[in-house]
Length: 534
Image (cartoon, rainbow, N blue to C red; front, side, top):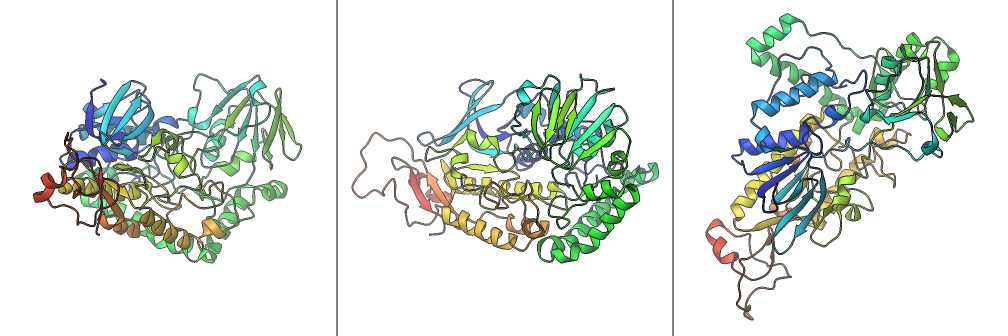
């Protein structure tokens, strides 16, 4: 990148969200864009998470783009290597490689009021963009808790999302910290090789059987020869999950049956009553993400595994001390402690029109308009933003809905013409957020009696969407200009403004300009705001 590089759109990240945005841009006829990726290859979380046993808990045919169906998935639930290969395939098929800028970590993004564009500082140089689409995702920056004594631990320490493949776990005494989606896959994968495995469990998860199998050659042949069968399979998987949403969002009491099935799953695998007591949750199923595994419980019953039903409190040399006083001598510590979800580090690197960072704007909790845009940050949008997560279905469905919104956002800018920008109105953001939070009150994620990574430091659920994917797609199908201020940066002029010219700081009551009036509207000195829909 050179100091003079300018693009219409800069996409941040090359996971599902970033690659999906790139494909949609090309399909909209937009080729003046780059995808900035801090690593050396595409894949996002499916590149970063390469730990033993890593796989998806959403069926393969639903965990893929609708515009890029994959008839050749080898299993009903695909492993990390297959999903990463799929993303590489999408990159090649849609000709995205010329747009990729690898090893280009974004250091800062700043809205330039005078130039009316974003200035983007990366680890490889500087560029500017009219529009920024941030697709870094919530599962990109690992969270390791500040455990007292961790700096003096003499052994090996790493996070599940930064697996050290050069370190040999065979014969080692290993501590697994956490019992989330990563941990329940790691534990059975490494248990046969380690000499001792100690699992520090702060909160037990609900675990259901994983109905996984190899997809037969006949099925794969059928999907290749008759593409509609792939679509039908995807549609069935989607429909089942849409029907489940009511129980999560409106009638959590109906999840009691699922809870009984989960208890039965545990009873079959764990005969020891004391161990079962440790592994039995005390909150409603669904409050935390329901995990899928056929091997987790059996692994915990092995003679070389200890379950400590308490969180890690401190580290004293090679000794790990739990909150209940239990101790374990270990050679390696693996943290499966999740990610910075409600406090995404990228928010510290986005400086808006008022000179404050997105993190400062979100100090009281993340909030955005339709999960995409934030007030005070013109021509900036995010993929998988606040309250767009799912508790029971595929995030690809939500991503594609947000790509629809992104595409219409860019179309609106084209219609407005000239140097225009859209800035979400604060009242629109607040109104959308208030409606989402009101719906959230009755959901299992808020009423189920657990503390989860869905909740922020203030106890607000700023992560999950409290409805169906169909509802979200409808809500993001079009950009409503009434929810935005239309900002204009007129052409530079050396002449002093006359007394009759519109104010450069107060919003005009004029309608958004038509294409025929662009020249007239863009000839005023300074930056003019036009209240959309006024």
